[in-house]
Length: 315
Image 1 (tube, helix red, strand yellow):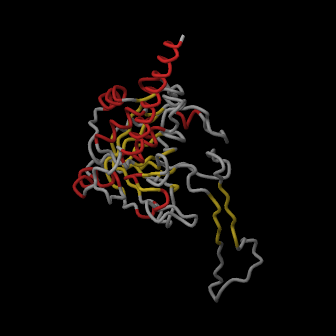
Image 2 (cartoon, rainbow, N blue to C red; image 1 turned 135 degrees about the vertical axis):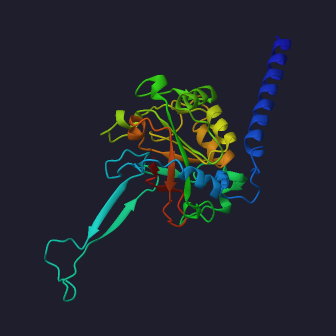
């Protein structure tokens, strides 16, 4: 018995050592960034004027697609996020017009989370053990009145090639919850679309989830999306952002329950790749559009972690 106990103790010690090594790897080996220790833009460094010019050549018909959903009080959101708007100077005809031209008008106040509806996750959104992209400690940039680094107001315009990978053609419409897209699935979808993913691209997955959950006021507990291997594969290819027509981009249930939101950590913290959530992809998929000119000017609201967005795809 003593020998068995000793063996068990030794085995537990080895497990603890392995756990400690894993934790050290988790916190120490993913930074500094390949873009330099002082970089704060991540994969946006892969955008170039030449890439934008080549992407513009994809415009052949001029048809535009709004990739942002309408955001309102009933938009499903990850609590405690919510949206509210108050219109001032109500035009009930009782106010006094201005000047001889009788000018009247309205104004509004918006009280909303910015991580709601169609959104971009900035690099200050999720980190590992309180370190964020490029290993920056939370104490170096987070304040209650706004981020001092990684604020989405600092992001340059994103004008590049967009790629739509229609995963419903392989897995059904909608793609079943829990279906992960890793390298094999991504390569197969890209081949079916006739595209090769390149540095500087924006890759968006169509899963049919948004259409399937239209009208719901609460978030679905599960969804299809990229897995960790797939996320790292896209980052290694040099994409600047990854999106999907669902609320969290990544596959849920997670591939490993002990590693929640591991795709977010892989893209944002480890690789500086931005995340686009709740993208409206139905019309692009219906028209069999696989590549297009992607344009996004992120609202320049100082210090925000995320931003409500409406990217435009032009074919």
